[in-house]
Image 1 (cartoon, rainbow, N blue to C red):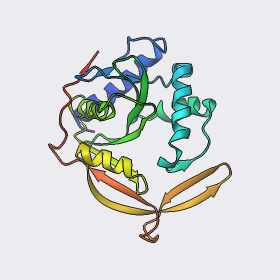
Image 2: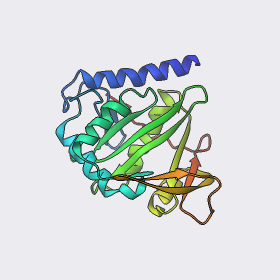
Image 3: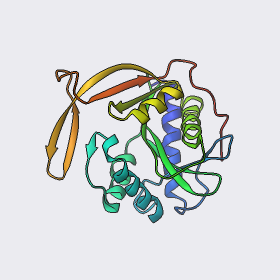
Length: 228
Protein backbone atom coordinates (compact mmCIF):
# COMPACT_ATOMS: atom_id res chain seq x y z
CA UNK A 1 0.00 0.00 0.00
CA UNK A 2 1.31 3.45 -0.91
CA UNK A 3 1.98 6.12 1.71
CA UNK A 4 -1.02 8.07 0.45
CA UNK A 5 -3.13 4.94 0.69
CA UNK A 6 -2.12 4.40 4.30
CA UNK A 7 -3.07 7.96 5.19
CA UNK A 8 -6.41 7.71 3.41
CA UNK A 9 -7.26 4.38 5.02
CA UNK A 10 -6.35 5.76 8.44
CA UNK A 11 -8.52 8.83 7.89
CA UNK A 12 -11.58 6.75 6.98
CA UNK A 13 -10.98 4.62 10.09
CA UNK A 14 -10.62 7.69 12.30
CA UNK A 15 -13.81 9.27 10.98
CA UNK A 16 -15.71 6.05 11.72
CA UNK A 17 -14.16 5.87 15.17
CA UNK A 18 -15.22 9.46 15.88
CA UNK A 19 -18.85 8.58 15.20
CA UNK A 20 -18.62 5.96 17.94
CA UNK A 21 -17.44 8.55 20.46
CA UNK A 22 -20.19 11.10 19.92
CA UNK A 23 -23.90 11.21 20.49
CA UNK A 24 -25.82 10.34 17.30
CA UNK A 25 -26.90 13.94 16.81
CA UNK A 26 -23.67 15.43 18.06
CA UNK A 27 -21.25 17.44 15.98
CA UNK A 28 -17.82 16.40 17.23
CA UNK A 29 -17.11 13.92 14.43
CA UNK A 30 -15.79 15.15 11.12
CA UNK A 31 -18.48 16.45 8.79
CA UNK A 32 -18.04 17.81 5.29
CA UNK A 33 -19.65 21.13 4.47
CA UNK A 34 -20.10 22.35 0.91
CA UNK A 35 -19.54 25.91 -0.23
CA UNK A 36 -23.32 26.44 -0.13
CA UNK A 37 -23.67 25.05 3.38
CA UNK A 38 -24.86 21.49 2.74
CA UNK A 39 -23.54 19.17 5.45
CA UNK A 40 -22.41 15.59 4.92
CA UNK A 41 -22.33 13.86 8.30
CA UNK A 42 -20.81 10.38 8.65
CA UNK A 43 -23.31 7.87 9.99
CA UNK A 44 -22.24 5.89 13.04
CA UNK A 45 -21.38 2.26 12.39
CA UNK A 46 -20.94 1.00 15.95
CA UNK A 47 -23.85 -0.63 17.73
CA UNK A 48 -26.30 2.13 18.69
CA UNK A 49 -24.18 4.93 17.20
CA UNK A 50 -26.66 5.84 14.45
CA UNK A 51 -29.69 7.77 15.66
CA UNK A 52 -33.20 6.35 15.44
CA UNK A 53 -34.05 9.09 12.95
CA UNK A 54 -31.13 8.17 10.70
CA UNK A 55 -32.00 4.48 10.74
CA UNK A 56 -35.68 5.22 10.08
CA UNK A 57 -34.92 7.53 7.17
CA UNK A 58 -32.38 5.18 5.60
CA UNK A 59 -34.95 2.39 5.79
CA UNK A 60 -37.70 4.49 4.22
CA UNK A 61 -35.44 5.76 1.44
CA UNK A 62 -34.09 2.30 0.68
CA UNK A 63 -37.60 0.93 0.26
CA UNK A 64 -38.60 3.88 -1.91
CA UNK A 65 -35.65 3.34 -4.27
CA UNK A 66 -35.46 -0.47 -4.09
CA UNK A 67 -35.36 -0.88 -7.89
CA UNK A 68 -32.13 1.09 -8.07
CA UNK A 69 -30.20 -1.60 -6.17
CA UNK A 70 -28.82 -4.96 -7.21
CA UNK A 71 -30.57 -6.53 -4.23
CA UNK A 72 -34.32 -6.04 -3.86
CA UNK A 73 -35.94 -6.71 -0.49
CA UNK A 74 -38.15 -5.01 2.05
CA UNK A 75 -35.88 -3.11 4.39
CA UNK A 76 -36.62 -2.89 8.11
CA UNK A 77 -35.02 -0.67 10.72
CA UNK A 78 -33.43 -3.74 12.33
CA UNK A 79 -31.94 -4.76 9.01
CA UNK A 80 -30.67 -1.25 8.31
CA UNK A 81 -29.01 -1.02 11.74
CA UNK A 82 -27.37 -4.41 11.21
CA UNK A 83 -26.13 -3.30 7.77
CA UNK A 84 -24.40 -0.28 9.29
CA UNK A 85 -22.71 -2.33 12.02
CA UNK A 86 -21.90 -5.51 10.12
CA UNK A 87 -21.25 -4.31 6.56
CA UNK A 88 -20.21 -0.66 6.64
CA UNK A 89 -18.34 -0.60 9.94
CA UNK A 90 -15.73 -3.34 9.34
CA UNK A 91 -15.07 -2.38 5.70
CA UNK A 92 -11.93 -0.18 5.55
CA UNK A 93 -12.87 1.18 2.13
CA UNK A 94 -16.46 2.13 2.81
CA UNK A 95 -18.13 5.08 4.51
CA UNK A 96 -21.65 6.56 4.42
CA UNK A 97 -22.78 10.17 4.91
CA UNK A 98 -26.26 11.53 5.56
CA UNK A 99 -27.04 14.89 3.99
CA UNK A 100 -28.49 17.93 5.73
CA UNK A 101 -29.64 21.00 3.83
CA UNK A 102 -29.21 24.62 4.86
CA UNK A 103 -32.74 24.47 6.28
CA UNK A 104 -31.59 21.82 8.76
CA UNK A 105 -33.58 18.98 7.16
CA UNK A 106 -32.07 15.61 6.29
CA UNK A 107 -32.65 14.97 2.61
CA UNK A 108 -30.39 12.24 1.29
CA UNK A 109 -27.48 9.88 1.47
CA UNK A 110 -24.19 9.32 -0.31
CA UNK A 111 -21.14 7.23 0.35
CA UNK A 112 -17.93 5.66 -0.88
CA UNK A 113 -17.15 1.98 -1.39
CA UNK A 114 -14.58 -0.36 -2.93
CA UNK A 115 -11.69 2.01 -2.30
CA UNK A 116 -8.56 0.74 -4.04
CA UNK A 117 -5.79 2.44 -2.14
CA UNK A 118 -3.11 1.29 -4.59
CA UNK A 119 -4.90 2.29 -7.78
CA UNK A 120 -6.43 5.44 -6.27
CA UNK A 121 -9.96 4.55 -7.34
CA UNK A 122 -13.22 4.58 -5.39
CA UNK A 123 -16.86 3.96 -6.18
CA UNK A 124 -19.80 6.18 -5.30
CA UNK A 125 -22.22 4.11 -3.27
CA UNK A 126 -25.80 4.40 -2.05
CA UNK A 127 -26.44 7.83 -3.51
CA UNK A 128 -30.10 8.59 -2.76
CA UNK A 129 -32.26 11.67 -2.54
CA UNK A 130 -34.79 10.80 0.11
CA UNK A 131 -36.85 13.99 0.17
CA UNK A 132 -37.15 17.19 -1.80
CA UNK A 133 -33.99 19.25 -1.54
CA UNK A 134 -32.96 22.65 -2.75
CA UNK A 135 -32.06 22.68 -6.46
CA UNK A 136 -28.59 21.31 -7.03
CA UNK A 137 -28.32 19.98 -3.48
CA UNK A 138 -27.52 16.38 -4.42
CA UNK A 139 -25.07 17.49 -7.08
CA UNK A 140 -23.18 19.70 -4.64
CA UNK A 141 -23.17 16.99 -1.96
CA UNK A 142 -21.68 14.40 -4.32
CA UNK A 143 -19.09 16.85 -5.62
CA UNK A 144 -18.11 17.69 -2.06
CA UNK A 145 -17.69 14.00 -1.29
CA UNK A 146 -15.59 13.42 -4.42
CA UNK A 147 -13.45 16.45 -3.59
CA UNK A 148 -12.82 15.04 -0.10
CA UNK A 149 -12.00 11.60 -1.52
CA UNK A 150 -9.49 13.16 -3.91
CA UNK A 151 -7.83 15.74 -1.67
CA UNK A 152 -7.91 13.94 1.69
CA UNK A 153 -8.03 10.23 0.87
CA UNK A 154 -5.88 10.26 -2.26
CA UNK A 155 -8.62 8.59 -4.33
CA UNK A 156 -8.52 10.50 -7.61
CA UNK A 157 -10.43 8.10 -9.88
CA UNK A 158 -14.17 8.03 -9.10
CA UNK A 159 -16.27 5.17 -10.45
CA UNK A 160 -19.99 4.47 -10.33
CA UNK A 161 -22.32 1.68 -11.47
CA UNK A 162 -25.96 2.28 -12.43
CA UNK A 163 -28.68 -0.10 -13.62
CA UNK A 164 -29.66 0.60 -17.21
CA UNK A 165 -33.36 1.16 -16.44
CA UNK A 166 -32.64 4.12 -14.16
CA UNK A 167 -32.49 7.04 -16.64
CA UNK A 168 -32.61 9.67 -13.88
CA UNK A 169 -29.42 8.33 -12.30
CA UNK A 170 -27.72 7.90 -15.68
CA UNK A 171 -28.39 11.54 -16.50
CA UNK A 172 -27.31 12.69 -13.04
CA UNK A 173 -23.89 11.08 -13.30
CA UNK A 174 -23.43 12.19 -16.89
CA UNK A 175 -23.98 15.79 -15.79
CA UNK A 176 -21.42 15.30 -13.01
CA UNK A 177 -18.83 14.40 -15.64
CA UNK A 178 -18.87 10.59 -15.53
CA UNK A 179 -18.33 8.74 -18.81
CA UNK A 180 -19.73 5.30 -19.55
CA UNK A 181 -17.00 2.67 -20.02
CA UNK A 182 -18.92 -0.56 -20.54
CA UNK A 183 -22.08 -2.50 -19.77
CA UNK A 184 -22.61 -5.96 -18.31
CA UNK A 185 -25.90 -7.90 -18.62
CA UNK A 186 -27.66 -8.73 -15.37
CA UNK A 187 -29.32 -12.02 -14.51
CA UNK A 188 -32.28 -12.11 -12.12
CA UNK A 189 -31.94 -14.56 -9.22
CA UNK A 190 -34.98 -15.02 -6.97
CA UNK A 191 -34.34 -16.07 -3.40
CA UNK A 192 -36.52 -16.26 -0.33
CA UNK A 193 -37.55 -12.69 0.48
CA UNK A 194 -35.07 -11.21 -1.99
CA UNK A 195 -34.27 -10.72 -5.65
CA UNK A 196 -30.63 -10.38 -6.67
CA UNK A 197 -29.37 -9.05 -9.98
CA UNK A 198 -26.11 -10.82 -10.79
CA UNK A 199 -23.65 -9.62 -13.45
CA UNK A 200 -23.55 -12.21 -16.23
CA UNK A 201 -21.29 -11.29 -19.18
CA UNK A 202 -22.74 -14.18 -21.17
CA UNK A 203 -26.29 -12.86 -20.83
CA UNK A 204 -28.27 -11.22 -23.65
CA UNK A 205 -27.33 -7.61 -24.31
CA UNK A 206 -30.99 -6.57 -24.51
CA UNK A 207 -31.47 -7.62 -20.87
CA UNK A 208 -31.21 -5.29 -17.90
CA UNK A 209 -27.61 -4.14 -17.66
CA UNK A 210 -25.18 -2.71 -15.16
CA UNK A 211 -23.65 0.44 -16.63
CA UNK A 212 -20.09 1.17 -15.47
CA UNK A 213 -18.86 4.77 -15.42
CA UNK A 214 -15.55 6.46 -14.77
CA UNK A 215 -14.77 10.12 -14.25
CA UNK A 216 -11.87 11.22 -16.45
CA UNK A 217 -8.92 12.90 -14.79
CA UNK A 218 -9.62 16.58 -14.21
CA UNK A 219 -13.33 16.30 -14.98
CA UNK A 220 -14.49 16.73 -11.40
CA UNK A 221 -15.22 20.36 -10.56
CA UNK A 222 -14.17 21.17 -7.05
CA UNK A 223 -16.91 22.10 -4.62
CA UNK A 224 -14.54 24.09 -2.41
CA UNK A 225 -16.13 22.37 0.53
CA UNK A 226 -14.59 22.23 3.97
CA UNK A 227 -14.53 19.89 6.92
CA UNK A 228 -15.47 20.74 10.46
